[in-house]
Image 1: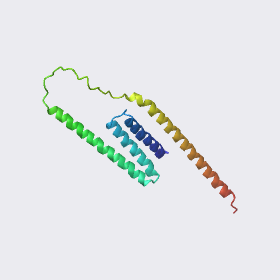
Image 2: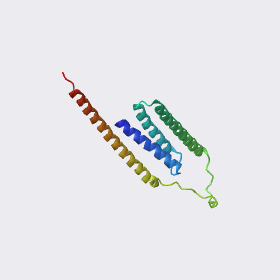
Image 3: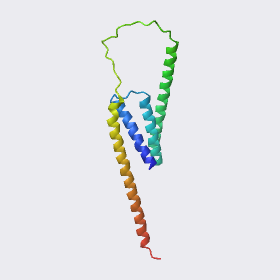
Image 4: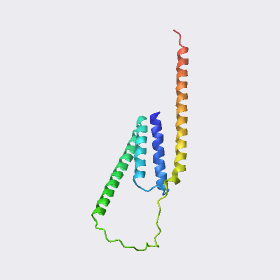
Length: 154
């Protein structure tokens, strides 16, 4: 049951990250890459528990790519901080900002809350349905075993 939940959580995290990135709500930054990393690790664990080697390898590589990108982001941020620290600061001059170029504001994460909430609800329902199906299959299996043994004569 834990492996199934990990699989569903991983799927939601990866798909939510991809949807938010594709819709322009999330930049290709640490949050997006962490979503890829966490989601792909969860999915890898799930598919490995089912013996699905190709899916395990693909998701493991997905996680490796996310780690590589995260490491590069950290290194680039450190280089930029070092460069900014070593650059002499010019005296402050007050100038008017150019008005010909529009400024873009980051989209608040609050806009994506309904999407994430709906995805979590779908996953919760799917996990509950899967658990009920597994429980029903187990009960059917035990009833079938009892019936097979009841017909044997000693």
